Length: 158
Image (cartoon, rainbow, N blue to C red; front, side, top):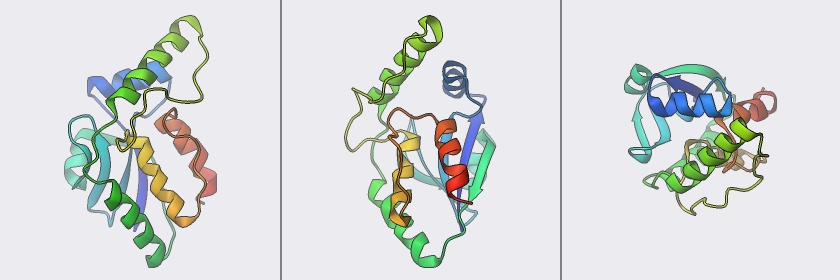
């Protein structure tokens, strides 16, 4: 089984993301077979980790369990494996952080495109591109927040 999870933590990065975006979560990840987590983090980039270690740090705010067959799961796994070991996209995060700060302080409009996004580097929400393997059309992810991704997917995946 594959689950999609949106989380928050007590870490400064999580708190900064939630404060600047005004959202209830700061991170997105895939949970595989209720044991492994596929995610992209500041420190390790795109990688697998154990669910119990992940839950020691993160609190799940939203969860969607995918009700798909084994062939569809396999297609998602292959997309995720293709992303493994990519670095975290710090340039995209810096740009978004700056733009959300401008938006929060002086109501500057948010961008439609992340001008500093690096190809072959991923923020956590960009891993959701793997869902295209099951026919989902994904929105632009390099300017999305974890919560906006959740709101986009929650009705599409029922």
